Length: 173
Image 1 (cartoon, helix red, strand yellow):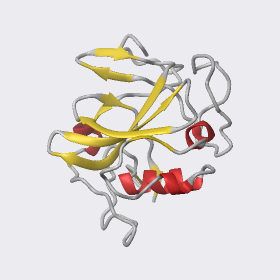
Image 2 (cartoon, rainbow, N blue to C red):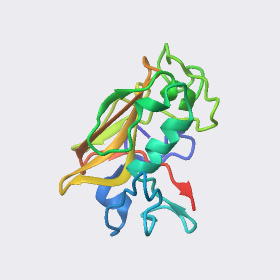
Image 3 (spheres, rainbow, N blue to C red):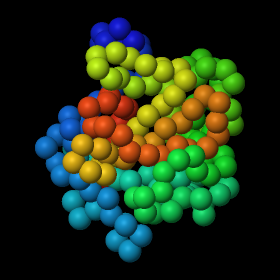
Image 4 (spheres, rainbow, N blue to C red):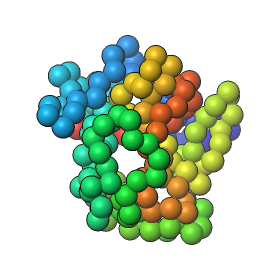
């Protein structure tokens, strides 16, 4: 929960530093010519599941909204992208998201929750923003992530320091 205590009724789940999430695995991306990683990164996911790469996040974004051309497969484009893709991934209503939860339809069934992030032992932005790691490193100390906001229907993608704690969404192999 927001006090750092395990709480079975907390809907947001855990926040993980990139290195812990990877659980000893090396970075993986894949690309438009070879979509899957040679070896998907299981990381902390259960057997039969893996951490999505930057490429896999991009593939999801291209397929959940009205602006697929806004999501290039490269690992250089960052910032706010798309039109309604973020809203289509977010849980509807304001039980967990702060009002107005712009564009939230959850028509994908992804049910993104705003778990916020952790940094330096503190918890920040729960209810306002959801952050999710990818299995793709940017440089030795940075990795790619995705963010959804309570007041936007787009997707934000960028890279940040690995010690931050973000949510993880596992993908079935």
